[in-house]
Length: 305
Image (tube, one colour):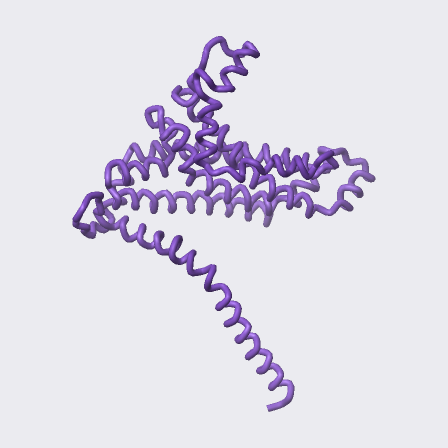
């Protein structure tokens, strides 16, 4: 064996030892993930193939694909999924637009910029249940600040029950969803903006490009990977939303704001159909992955063009 071969083998052995050391250090972080994420996921998939129900001493039987067949023909579920898609797409698009504007503002030479950034992150620090209860007070038909403000501005002549009206319930919770999800989108976009080279803007300004042209031809193309990543994550987070909407409307009025996860929750914990609810969760996951895959595929095709 030559000295070079011995050195290569020694380096490979040290690399394997380092990999084992890193894997050992990762164990404390992986164990909670396996217990609280992977374990329940696998158990939920198992339940989706059974007739598990609530109640003491309930006998669980394997039913194969029966639950999924019922999902395909369940009009109530597909109605809730349609509402969920409207909710998720609307909130994702609106919070991206609002977050982009806020990120551009926070990236400028703003006075007290540090304080403004801290205040912009405030909704991120609040639990979804607290946000839901807070906005219920804002939307309260008699004592809510929204009705009082609109009456004082002579926009409305009478109180509006925003969360119990068929025409306003869904738009009302969309507003709350945008307000809630905007901070994390702003943080990601702000980080992306700070990675855009200032020399590109300076060179474009020298060539006579205005603010809008520089934004469209320089800033947006540079942000494209960040935009694809954060909008994909936002869509997944939004369609899986539960706690905030439950605190606001509990799916009412008449199912007008019953998102898919609320529907699955009711099937499991109101009616006791745990196997069917698990099948709903699996079906929602599959459909979301398909929609997200098509979106990412289209974006990658546009990037390659």
